[in-house]
Image (tube, rainbow, N blue to C red; front, side, top):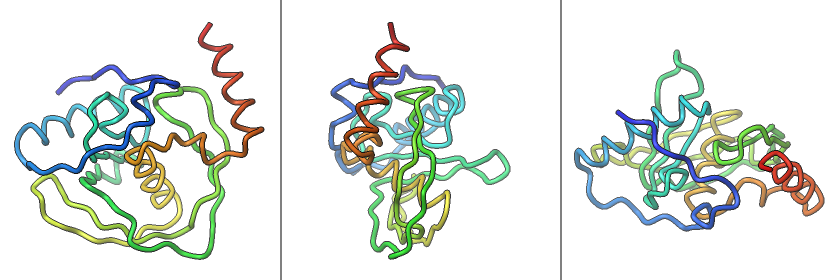
Length: 164
């Protein structure tokens, strides 16, 4: 459909808690298509509606073209494992900046698809990390908030230098 402009850190929109989707119609499907096009152009493996300034609980994840596109509408984590995983994360809103984040290794997530049907699934490893990362964004938590203060400050300084 269309590649939309992406909000860049430190845009206040990235701290906005998104509203649940209540209407499952063509506009939602069009939004999901735009998110996919925008994510691929960025490039990235995950994106939320908040990244493009639409504050609805919609996330799109595509770990690879062969793995297919996953749409998560109104996602919520139902349970997490005690085991954790370290993974390098970044954001389409802060291109070129990455750091290691520790998260639960496995999760159970409940969400709706684009037609409104409720699903629940288990995810582990990279997929679990991606889902948690995108749900954080839907909750107004930008990924760098998961870093220590020192790491976050260093990363923000590097980002500010890049933007000048």
